Amino acid sequence: MARRIWGWMLDRPAISLDLALSVLRRLARGERNAASFEPAPGDHLAPPEPASAEEIARESGPRQVAALPWRRKGSGKVEVMLITSRDTGRWVLPKGWPERGETLWDAAAREAGEEAGLKGRVATSEIGRFHYDKLKASGQLLHCEVAVFPLEVQTVASKWPEKGQRKRAWVSPKEAAERVQEPELSKLLKGFSGTARSLAA
Image (cartoon, rainbow, N blue to C red; front, side, top):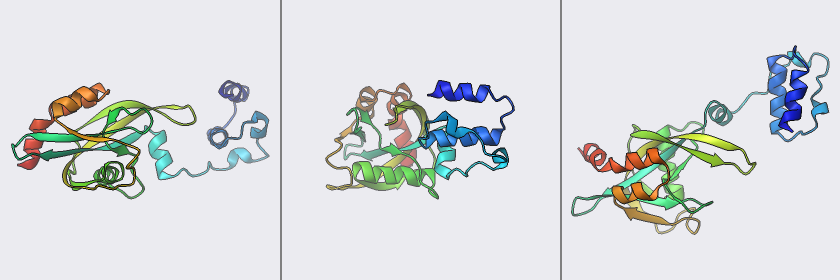
């Protein structure tokens, strides 16, 4: 289908940017008939449909946020919490898309509550980023960048929105680094004990 649409556009070298955007948006909405993209008189002058803030953020480079939940035990040792993903069951951090009007750190804190039942004090500065590939239901593969915000956990709920869909585990930063599959995230976790000391200072 994408090849036919591309061929349709190549056959029309004078196609305007506005019309090209219009074609792509119609395709995204599921209009599969290339003939339906033929412009009506003056169609090339119409401005493209406005995109939402979420669409703009994702189209310009998908960026998610993640909370790195942590706590200090009585012995002084730092533990971090990992949760399992709903699709493959691999170990991950609570993460997701920021919503309209949210700061990145507030979005990370919200994801920790929804996905892991955690509340606490979230850092307003990220400690790093990692990348992973997200497979959408449509089959599209997104290469996502994730900004990580530490969350010092103060309460752990016994019931939360995604209980029953995920497991959660308190582990050492070293063990967490071994459980996750993303090399950049593993590196962040390996050095997190020192990061936690600076956050608590």
